View (cartoon, one colour):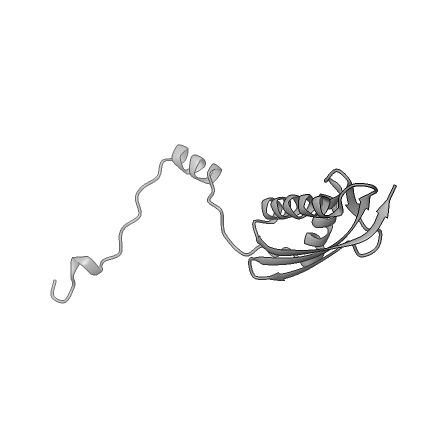
Amino acid sequence: MVGVRSDTVPRQREAVSPGEAAGRHARARDPGGRTDIPGAVIEKAAAKAAGEVSGARAARSRAARARVSGEVVLLKLRIEVSYPRPTLQVARAVRGHVKDRIEQITGKQVHHIDIEIAELVR
């Protein structure tokens, strides 16, 4: 045939047996798409993670604030520290634990965590 090149002909579908078709649907591939994680969700997770550190707990009011920019998270935490624990050591432990936990849960990178010691509690 004049004007028809074999490299422009689309690949033909292969015949599929019924058994293969069933297996193919069982192993459906991920359709992709976008997953949004609002700042409020990250705030709740951060407050909970802060409470998991010995000697610290999230402050009663507005314990965490998150700012999300793409895949980067900036956090501000307000915590209460058990007296007479060293506040700097507790803050360092909270910072490390919250960073690890948020990155594990969300897959986003925690760039920076500011911590305010709201209260010393017995």
